Structures are given as C-alpha cells and as structure tokens.
Image (tube, rainbow, N blue to C red; front, side, top):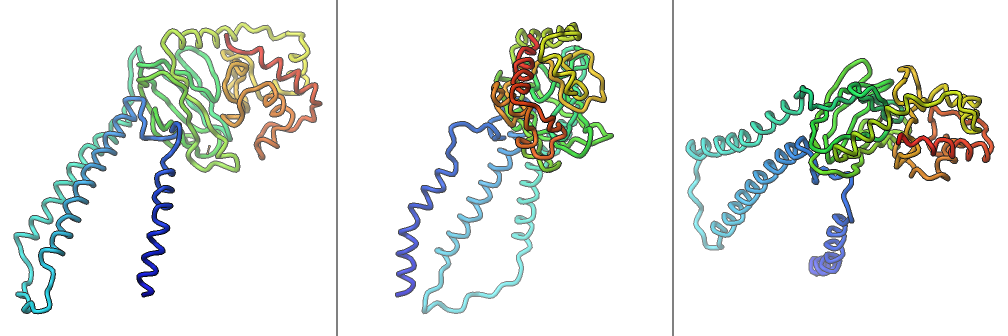
Length: 341
Ligand code: CUA
C-alpha cells in the first residue's frame, strides 16, 4: 500500500517537473550559448560536438534497446528449467571490443583534427590582426596594422579572418567568445592565439572565463561584427583621434587632467603608451557598455561610475577621487563627446 501511495504522489508531482524541465530551456535569446555558432571556428567545434552527440545517441538506443529486448525475451518463468551455464565467448568479446574502438575512432579523429586546426596561425594581407591584453578587469584591443588601440569592444569585419595574439597584463584570464571563437586562456609573459571568421554581422557578448579576482564576473566584452565599410569607418575614426587637441580648455578636459584621469587613460587611440593602467577611452562616448560590459553606457551610469567606481566594481584600480556630482557629470559629458567618429 505504501508503495502505491508513493507512486500516486510521484505521478502528481511529475507534470510540474516536466514543466520545470521545459522552462529551463526557455529564453528569448541565447547570448552566451555555444550552440549558435556564428563563425567558421565555432561551426567546426559545433561539428565535433554534434558528431559526438549522434554517436552517443546511437550507442544509447542500441545498448538500451538490446537491454530492454533481452529483459523481455529471456525473462524467467516459474517453471523454467535451470538455464545452460556458459563461460566466455571469444567471438562476442571481439565484437564488443571492436565496435567501441571503431566508434571512438569516429569521434577522436575529427576531434583531434579540429584541436590542431584551432592552433592555426593564419597569415596574409587579408588577415586582420588584433593584440588582446587581459587586465584586471577589462580587455585591451590593439590593431597593429592600423596603429590603434581600444578597449572592451572588439570591432571586426564580417567574412574576414581575424587573428588574435593574446596575453595578460597581470593574472591568468580566459578570452571567451561563445558564438565566434570559443575560449582560450590568456597568460602573463606568454602568447596564446585564437582565430575566427565571423559569418554574420551583429553584436556578440564575450566574457572572461578564468577566475581572476573579485570582479572576474564583471570582466565582459562585446564583439561588434560589422560590414567591411563600417569597420573601415570605425578604424578611420579611431585613427583620427590621433590628431586630437591636447591643450583643450573646456571644463571637462581640465578636470580630466587635474583629477589625474589622464594618468591611466588615453583619449588618443593612436598615441598609446603601453604603460597605461586603464582602458583607452578614445571612443568611449560611442561604446555600448562601460566598466567592461558591466553598465549600459548612459550619461547617468557613466557619471556614477566615474564618481563611485568601487560601488560598481569593488576592488577596481580606478580610485575614488572624491569628485562632486557636478564634476562627475562634467567629466561624463566630456567623455561623451569622444566617439571616435
Ligand atoms: Cu579575467 Cu576572469
């Protein structure tokens, strides 16, 4: 009786569990999903994944099917005689060794081939090279071919191979673009690489994927995959910031110098001294996010971030400068004019 009650109770809960399971897969979009590849690199990895899934599914159906069939076909009956006792069967043992070995080969050969392919170092005039540097807690993107540097938003042209040469300024980070270029650790004093060719324009999220301190979770970035024309305009805009007037006399510019912002940040994407601690801000006014993907780039958020950085990201290197709200707003308005356009 107790067993029946338990079954009845389980049946009553079952529909809720099913609904929960279905809802768990519900989302309007899948920004961090690796199951929606948008580059040749991630399509290759998706191919390896799906190959493994189909083989695993085939194994599951065949093995479980054979098991269920055997249970019913050879089930015992009360008046059955003692079954014939056997020990070992060389033919069957060879078969059940050979088949899994063959299946493993069907999975491992394409997998190993793909792993080697991910370490390719594409070359040629068409390849867009980007030096990626991980910092606690933001990303620097330097384009050696164009002589410009930016931060936290990686702009790339669609349909062209991008070659990333990466290292870290401080601790180990991991550069992860789920839809475009998978994931690769980033080390101090050691170069790692990644390549991809995006096949659809769009704005894709990325994230540091190696615990790197308290704000590891707020070390995001975005990849803006643009048409070649848009990308050219983007680069030209950044290059134009190289001619920016440094002796600007507007209030924001004075504050930027007087409060020491200039010690860590450059508003010039071209003349960039490697020792700078903070992100290059040459086009910060036009970025979608600030504080490495943490805040939407609104005037209010920008002023708040400048005035109270620690309240947004505890442990951030940017100090609390004791700015008044008015000063923070003036600085935000000044930075807003730096769009790199
Ligand atoms: Cu950088 Cu986690």
